[in-house]
Image 1: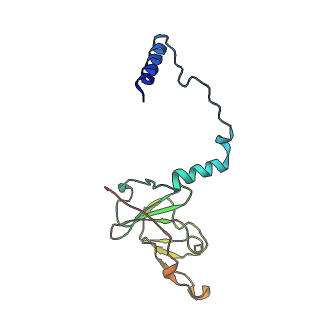
Image 2 (image 1 turned 60 degrees about the vertical axis):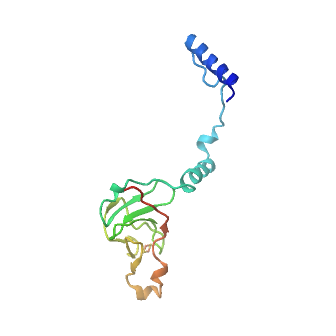
Length: 157
Ligand code: FES
């Protein structure tokens, strides 16, 4: 900032202090009301702030033990965070690969998750471990039907 502009701003602030008044912007700003109500703007903001950037979802202590898990629904994509049996932190889309039902709710300790819809079973490493009545469903390559893993990093925990 140029020195003369800086001095001018300081003088104005001192004058307002002397007169015991505060004119922050000096003008009245008008915002269209749809910035508060528009679904499109809200979705753009969600995309920009929450999906285009890494998000802090918890402190390491939120997953204290091998088998600990928690769900997060703050970013528009349901997230299942786990600490697997080796202690590794992982994150998955909390959606069954069969019909998309959530496989976990809230938080707790478990080495596996059973989808409440048709009981497909996933490990806390995201692998599809079992399909009840598999013969009736037909051939399914379980290696391709694990939970969708999200990029995740635990740091300083
Ligand atoms: S939706 Fe999960 S087992 Fe069918």
